[in-house]
Figure 1 (cartoon, helix red, strand yellow):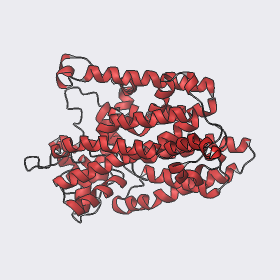
Figure 2: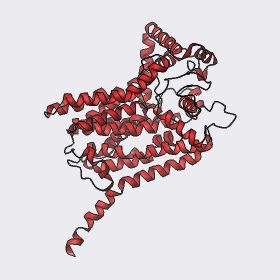
Figure 3: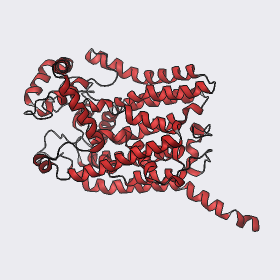
Figure 4: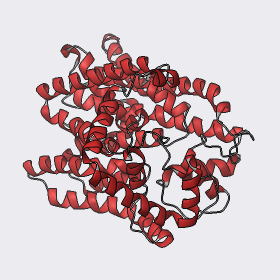
Length: 452
């Protein structure tokens, strides 16, 4: 009896840890579903909104084409030919919903927002393990709970039809693995990591910009420990390439272009760097400009995008100072939310001051957190530095809207927790004890024994 009583507190503690992540995930999902109930009927699928633009925009139009038997095509409302304007993963998911519940139907709106909400809630898992590895179990629990309540995560999953939640879950998992992959001596683990990165790129190719740096970081640590770094690097790269190859071949056969994932980069560069303030900011996009739509339909996708490439390059060569200034302004906006407080801006965006304050606070805590982590454990801080330094570069030269931060928002949140918590609450564990629900990831992370 005495022995049994002595173990009761430990058993109760183990039981609480066993249910920690499921409780957080369920709470996150329930909160998002409450928001879904208020938003799904607002998707413009009624007859007066013939283009159904906000039901996924380009991804929704491609999903409509897939569900209608036209293949991966028609990235804008008029029917057109094959396209590579968007990565394939989310349009295929959305097209499956359309096939089962109806194209642009109320039921499809509810289902796809519910799926987004579930994916966002499941992101609590890699957030927890990422924070646990670098900051300790207490901070990991706080980070997971904050993600469950995080306004950005809730809004962009429960209120918007796009790939944010899917990319966020996949990319945060890639990052979580990147933190500790150097501990693994199993070639299969490196193959799996590369394949997962390739799959994530099929949701949002911008994540590929971080793979070389995260891989080099991991390989450097393997080399220092005397491991087979060259083999592991080759396996990871080959796995990512193998996953991307079928879609690359499809794009070449359908469009005659060599394009691993999507082909609209130069359209976005031209769209936000033309410098003509008298034009609508999206005037280069066919869905916002009838003249551009006519050119799109007559020239075809490859010809239209080739023209935008030439126009963008000419403008950059003729106005380099303007492009540099605007790039710096977009970078500032990316981390502060501030673009303008003019009367026109405040009229169109009345909540802009509050959003600026919110984004600035998160960015300040992020910077404070990464500095504290750098002084405490540089090896743990380096992956985060790679993420926040490399990933946004694509958006600095195209568009820097707040929703384009979503793939790295989980890492930003973990750093913000590091910046907000007292040092005494940051205790990176030197050994991971797998209890309850955590056992699901034991085969992947069993080799972890130190923080770096």
